Length: 244
Image 1 (tube, rainbow, N blue to C red):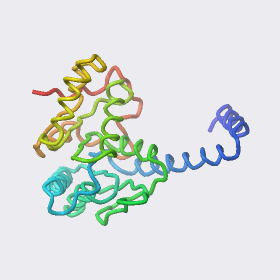
Image 2 (image 1 turned 90 degrees about the vertical axis):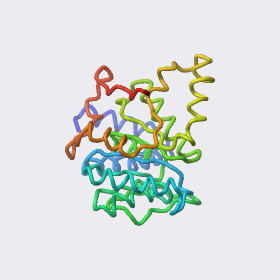
Image 3 (image 1 turned 180 degrees about the vertical axis):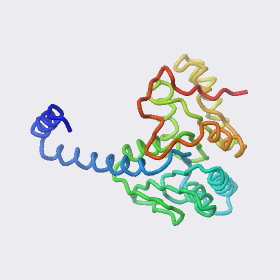
Image 4 (image 1 turned 135 degrees about the vertical axis):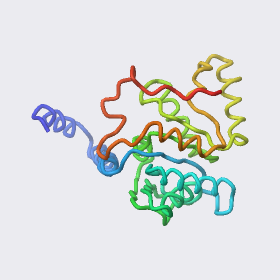
């Protein structure tokens, strides 16, 4: 830490109310523990989806299969660490012997760390957890889910749209589930010029696990302690996947 930064940090701390200083320290704890963990794990594939899906559901089975196939190809799997789709993706990777990461958050209902994790962290704040779910990933996969899944999808979609992060492959798995949202974006949102129609090319709907694995393989395997966000230059960001 250089002297100027340390001076500014002390001045900031002195200017904050005690309650805000405590809150800032809790934010920093969530962020620092996540960043420390991610520097020990090769950047992989982050899988999102409903916590309410149970074993035997078709999407549970597909997420488990995806986790296994990605692990076979040497890709780490990261999820929110809970049950449902998260458990399924972690389970597939874990059963194959791959790296299976869970970034968990304690909620009043639904959320507990699943048993198929090689690495797990507990977060207090959603925003810090989402930062780490994003930074852990070179490919994003969204299975059917509720408000949490939609929140995670639209936030990362917006960051890519505005060139605040690299344009990494982004898949909505389950065409029958996601086609209504895709139509809404293309006809209503783009139709009112709230987005450009080309913005809907950032993501792609699929029912094909192999397509996702191929996308991860094309990017390759960043070395541990390297991250595609390091020294990110928007002018050199990855192109969005095109529909076709």
